[in-house]
Length: 384
Image 1 (cartoon, rainbow, N blue to C red):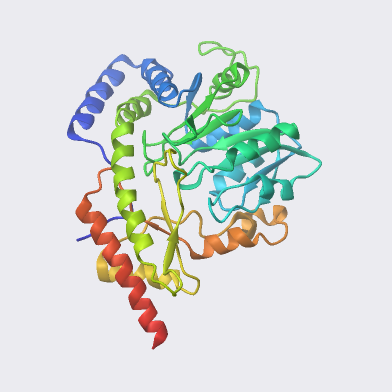
Image 2: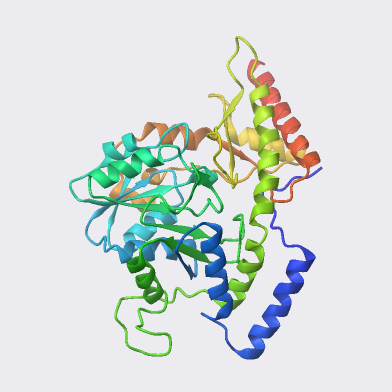
């Protein structure tokens, strides 16, 4: 059996509906910022209990627009070092300086303590990234810290479609949240992003920024330094159709994750170090398991583990989150500070088991037996 790292799920009915809508879009010539975009925005806002949603060209654009609307120019913005480079790129392009912070080993995310350690006199905002779909249980403490210091909390929820902590959806803990619809994401429009917010001012600014900073769609009076951040109608209808499956996808992924949880916990043996550990979800919370993160014990060679799984068992692991922290990447040399040991360790060791929105129990079982066998094989090689 072969289990790929990712699988994009569109049913035959979905494809037929999108094809029909595409024909309609192309025949009318209404190719951007039309009815499908408005429908997609309304549906996404409703699914996340957000007052406002604005569809844009990418998750990166969504985050940059939020930061621009908050006017972070010439200030410091704290970001976790174990995030995709786009998080920090958005900060830079909004005119601010990224300040890299360490994270909690239990959540792969910022906490009040790690943010407090990274604060500067010029800190204007914090970008909390919900890695792998886990909304950190530290989010409320972090929000309190930001409120006490008059710092803006922004959420990079690129991984977190449908995710919740204590009944609150990702994107609603700070002033605004950004989502991505890149092909591998739980919900995809091919390319695209979404801003969610309860702030009418951010909502209004986002509508202007995404369309070249124009005061209105049909005019050419520019009131902000915007960009071509529009989402096409072709992308919008794709996202709108896919979004209808959110609850179904969440149910499947939760079921498979429960199998993974039990199996990873079952690897432990009394009196011996656990071969691997996993992140834990607070009771009642919702994780979409965009990434199912596992920490092999210290000393396991990740490259050999991945090679063993792929070549001997046909299991391709998902990409890491992330394999090299940003403060160690050449493009951010000018912004790198000191060591961030927790993130450095997490980035160097973790793996992500494949988990798909239509995954079968047989595939999950194959992944688990293969993972256990690969770990055992590496242990034997090490002993030899």
